[in-house]
Length: 462
Ligand SMILES: Cc1cc2nc3c(=O)[nH]c(=O)nc-3n(C[C@H](O)[C@H](O)[C@H](O)COP(=O)(O)OP(=O)(O)OC[C@H]3O[C@@H](n4cnc5c(N)ncnc54)[C@H](O)[C@@H]3O)c2cc1C
Image (tube, rainbow, N blue to C red):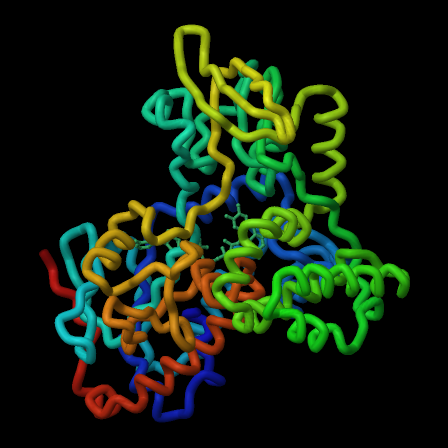
């Protein structure tokens, strides 16, 4: 986002002055940092290369370190972080002298508004505050949801609510990972990479589905009228599922497989989602979501091989079951599961339980101080399906009265309430580009700023 704002393509020349004082707050605590370390250990992907989501620039950057890197490779997330750092530094060097960029190490705990049109006051946990003409909430991923089934062990040391704060390599422990998606794969693989891994890892989800393998993308396996087929089916989930099956069958006939079709649907998802009536979105979430998620997220072949060999050795046991309850005593944590399709329950005894259900974006539940304040002050409202945030054009955040913005914007995965697919760097990058252009225009239209009168970034100390 900052790179885009500093980029000349976002601005007509007079706009530079308008953007003066734009500031970015940045927290010391970073879930992304934790992931970065994980990915360095795991050499895990930073993007889905096979559907061309590696921006060309990033590919060129990666090739400077290793000329053999191909667009199909999964690259370490740490490398993507280095690339972003370098891109931002280059944008800062190229920016006109009157554009200031300040990187603050502080946590924002409140954004306050007195009048709809007035600038916003951004309050930091160190007691200081900023006044900003526009604020972009780009705060990344939230923690996993609180699960009612773990209520009895929530405060117990054996329970890990945030998988990125896993305290150990689980040496010799029996571990239950709740969730069987990418987070489970990251945590399980990392644990087994240590010299002394866990005794056994159980992973549970209702369908017990583990992400499948990624393959090379074959754009020629897609039919030309695919988007029209999807848009025509969008008013009904049932028809949409049939349309996707049709695209898969066509891709297979053309020598590809379901991955081409799913990648294609993913690109069309925002338009399709916007055409779906609320009741159909609900139906999709109830009946098709877990299948969509498991096919949309894929693993590099090497990671899947590792997972399969752990399963074959009995070191990783994946359960298709519902988590019913947990309780702790001196022996460990007793977990009750009800296997899919079965009436009889099963018991597991483990030493540790880790919530790997992925980030929870339901604003009604988020307990983070900033989101709580925005929700309580009516500056941000949840969407009706609990997917994230109600936003308008360019991520303008709707307030309680139903007005979007005009000064508060959001950029991140909670955009999925309106766009469905808004998680990966590729999708967010597009949103960032559009928002940067909008902000540059908005700030240049502000006469006070254009005249250089308002130093909106003034920081007031405690
Ligand atoms: C487990 C996992 C794996 C993923 N893997 C991939 C992948 O391989 N490829 C891909 O494209 N995408 C992946 N994603 C999605 C990925 O999160 C996004 O693509 C990308 O990180 C989003 O960038 P961001 O800047 O919006 O958020 P982040 O990178 O999370 O950055 C948010 C920043 O905001 C800061 N912050 C938060 N709250 C505050 C506050 N109150 N005050 C001040 N600062 C604050 C945080 O400390 C952090 O620095 C993954 C997500 C998860 C959860």
